[in-house]
Length: 223
Length: 391
Image 1 (tube, rainbow over the protein chains, first blue to last red):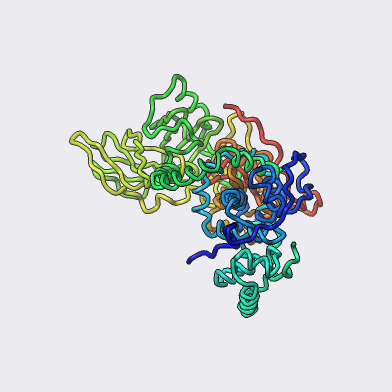
Image 2: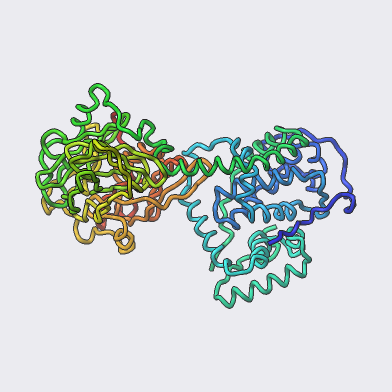
């Protein structure tokens, strides 16, 4: 199946949004998520400044990780995929213009494709993944039981929507589980917002018919 | 109702570590070179793929196992003092009396009929008077005794070989008989590994890390060699320890002279657990498949999954009336598991965490323990610190 490109468009077509051209600032790296600059601003800075890109990771890394975890029900795999998503985002930063206020829909669009091709993605970035710092076994053992519980809950949730067509499943994960608005999900999937609504409606109908109700959140609730 | 929002939130430390790794990667290579690297990387994928496939093949077999680093596919000459030490470490004395609980399983009296040395590991074969046999494997910090019943398969042809017993798991043991003309033999495993067996007195023994099965056998006689599909007795995989028998209770012994808690007690009926101490139905259901339920039961932890890039976990569902004994620590240490902090019991589950790709299956022993009305016994008992093991 051909994968739709998210809203990645050449800068020659998409007008560049305005932003303040201030120099990247040194910041305390220990203050995760304390940077007040907007995504748009950071994205512009990130073209030449990896530190700005690091701030974007701090800001959206958890959401991307959660998306990957929900799509794979494998927390270890989700960690690797999260890194891959940002490596891919960095790779195409110079030919990508962001038009929304948040970078998250675009990142989830990359995550969407990365998860679909998880094996290929990991193979492509295997060298980078191999350089990840090793985690002590004792650290991995911490709270392992709750992690296993979470993976099982995620697997159950995935199983519940397994019968849905891929397109409807993607909408369920993005809108209902990841908390994107219809518009942001449309950006992530590269489809009109109306298509997102209709797919979600069909997904609801199918799951209601099968007596499965995975809808515990409302659109945009987790934003 | 399914709650899909239960994704554990990564800590700030995790985010910081991943961010630093990401930034290091971004600074690692300039953009143009990165692009070239990507193209080159894709071009190299074909070759890398082949290498990966080969690596996977090896990873499943004993050659790649890191749990028994000194293991050799062919028997080695024993180091000075290795055989006497191995013989001394195998429990001496007569067979343990019947009953559910008894003294540690002993090997039959007398010298071993056959010995097989592979690096630092020794396996001795003792023949029982009833036609059965007992294998005693020792190395590092452990001793494992495997009693087997008399073979049921007919004797092999003069130039043939028959495998009478296969005990698989983290380590696979094989025992069998060879014809009178056979002077040597080898087994080819399913992954292609060729394991030379030790032949003597009409018997042969061998073992290898992992659970690869036997594909073919090669018998050598004075007139040459012949190969063919391995002749495995129909009951070779039969569990040597039926439920409620003493041998099952005593497959592992610590080398520091101590007796694991689950082995204490005599063979009298007073030591047998009360009926109400039997595991919950859910445990019994799973036990029918893999566990030999007795006072000290043998369980397979084969629900293995990755936990992180470096770790994996294995899990066994147990009831709250089952505690993990020091057997777990023995195997955990030997197979590279982090045993003391990572053997967790939570809501009736035993979870072991270990290095990834090192443990394919973990064998532990669990002991049914009566749970009275004492509120102290309502929860899961703590496993306690592992005993120091002496080599």
